[in-house]
Image (tube, rainbow, N blue to C red):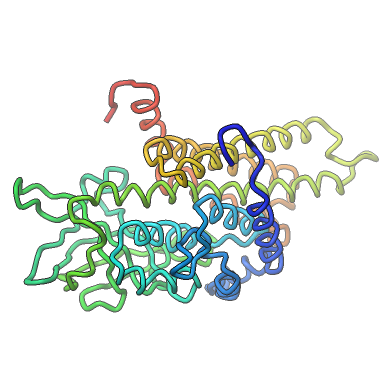
Length: 388
């Protein structure tokens, strides 16, 4: 998909169709049942891995599909549109897989990428801290040299899927030998490392993935735990954050489509006063508005993915932020209108919408808040003075 062609390539269209079929094979009932039972969606994850969907963005030489983040985003969107989104696709193949593929050593690539691509290994991402949410410059997790290796200490919060992961890609800071200032650095930390502990955060969300607080108490790591160049971590960090925003947008878009499809089907079937309720403009117009918002958000998401896959990280950053913002808003409006269209049934478990109310609200907060996106656009896109 280029600047003048708004039709996705045939290969991606076929990928969407196949991923959608797999997603519908499991569906929302499967997803909700697993989530309410405190279980994981392992069957869908494992089958997606075997079929090559989880690693479409990773290099072919390491078991991936050799495509881009646009293709991985399409897979996630189709799973979500079928009612079975896989949140860890955002972090394992998209963030961690991308960072290692672009900046990792040969050994790190051989060790991690085949498993990530095939779904047999998972790596999650840890940046947020109790006192460093949007302000990542305040990160206090630090790594100090210890002989030929590193010692990592600090805390992280709201880290997804640690209980499922083989390792965590931790954003820490190291001391600059020349200035003494702390600078970002990325480390692969196996979850069974001595001194690494995690505690579940109870959430009012119905989802198979859990959130955790991490405690790193003098975790000893070998030299090869460092990803990429110690002095280039900012560039490496943003190479992972742009895919995170694009994938977050894809997650929201798929959920919006799921809710809209449910609402349209109900509006066509449910009859009052002798006519389908969808014939009344009080319902038809809000649903049409949601459709427009979803399509606009999809275009921005596709633009962001296209820019990122072309290697333009800076331009992709602006579009990825806008896409994440637009898709989150579209999902919130879609779910709200779907519930309204169903009336009381909108909150009945059998209709599969009530649990989405809190789920889509998360899109305004993570992976970056709506307000921080607006700050970015105000400062970088409009040239306004920095406000924070």
